[in-house]
Length: 147
Ligand code: DHK
Image 1 (cartoon, rainbow, N blue to C red):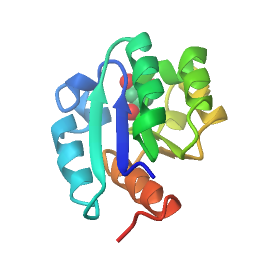
Image 2 (image 1 turned 180 degrees about the vertical axis):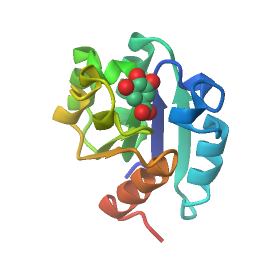
Image 3 (image 1 turned 120 degrees about the horizontal axis):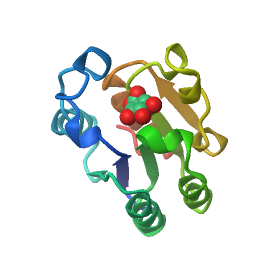
Image 4 (image 1 turned 60 degrees about the vertical axis):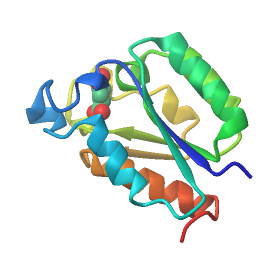
């Protein structure tokens, strides 16, 4: 059993805390990592990554096949466009939780469709960065790694 949770983030999330804070808030990916690490039981690791490149995200999802018990993914704009990320997630066997910081359903129509939701075991939108914590908790409970 792999005891690592991988949190993967797509384009522009490197600017989290700086870009459109009225939508995405003032906290950064470093804050996401700190909050999520605090939830982990002894013996469970966390890898948090961000890329602006679709192929890099595909490579990391493939890497997670051998290393991770679950994936938390915020594909950002690729949510709405990427069959490649969907296909890569189909090749991953553990739980996948899709996170959106904003409530995408309250925004433009093009954000209402998600390719990734065709694979995700759970979808969280609009909880701000607390959504990542909820996703990590869910993976811990699904994989029996909690507590
Ligand atoms: C982040 C983005 O960058 C957008 O492209 C998505 C997502 C929504 C979020 O809410 O975390 O549409």
